Amino acid sequence: MRLGKLVWVALAAAPFLAGCGDFWQAPSSTGSSTCTTNCSTADSGDFYILNAGATPQIVGASITSGTTVTALSGSPWTVASTPYAMAMSPSGNFLYASTIAGVYVYPVSSGTLGTAVQVSQDVAALAIQVDTSGTWLIEALQSTGGVTLAAVPLSASSGGDNGAEQTAAYTVANGSVQNGKIAVSPDDKYILVALGAGGTIIVPFNASASGGANPLASTARVVNVANSDSETLSVAVDPSGSLIYIGETNASSSGASGALFAYLYSSLANTSLTAATGSPIASGGLAPNAILPTSSGYVYVANGQGTTAAGNISSFAVTSSGTTYSIAAGSTIAAGTQPYALAEDSSSTFLLAISSLGDPYFSWYTFDSTTPGKLDAQSTANTGSSPVALVTP
View 1 (cartoon, one colour):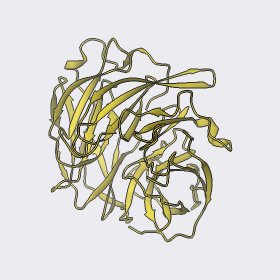
View 2 (spheres, one colour):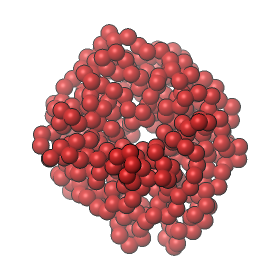
View 3 (cartoon, one colour):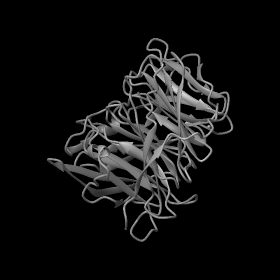
């Protein structure tokens, strides 16, 4: 099987559609949990789920005593229109939600969301993320013949817009922005967006840009899909920036299952990307919808297995020897139908998952205390229908 071909795309004149924590370590002997006694009775940090069901809303909650979902004060919060994606500021003080009516910021105080204020009028921000400095809100919008990125300067005090939005349009054949599938590198130098059949676009970024300068580069790298019928569904960068990850459908050697690609982050400066040993590796299912690198040196992939079958979450161990990185398959555990997003709570005790088609919509797991990287099923809950995003402070 061939690896995705790399091309560079220049800033295009495509029309703009106005208004759709941790550091990497070697795998530990106890997984990534900080719970040293009985994780099944632990409490989690806060988390937020964006539901796109009949009543669009943001649900805020935490897990109490390992098994109970406890709503945060004021939850749920109504979203006025069709939602697409969500992002949390690095400080945890602001939550952003993109909708068909624009992008809104909610101040966060003791877990409770305050009154939403519009931060961008872009009505098609399918994927959003805040850079690690908290200075920029990055939006990925579908545009004719490719993708448009927008960068909104943010106020440190209010989380709202703090100047003129900057944009850059890129021509990408067959590019289709995947809802919520965007990542910013920990050093704020690159933005990665999953573009379906168009592959992955990697845009150089300058978070220090000021005075109205555009932080988005005029040229970008595209990692093409591995096979003609493959689609890139997810992207991620590990917390230290050592590796980037890409999840594709139909990317196995037989073209019949999903694959996880792992590339050295340092090779982004080179003509060709350097794959980690073992990459690409079977993702564990048909559709690798989400990738979650954790601080323990394990990567988790949420796989869909069709619209009527239960999905799963597969673990992968990442190890290094000098500048050589290797990835290897670990264990797999059942999840809901089409698991769509993963998050690790702030206590590093629980892995959280939402499934867009439910059965269940929300589930959580603990990290096994004896087998590194292994997940133990904890419990499930009904937190609203058709979730599209999950974030933790």
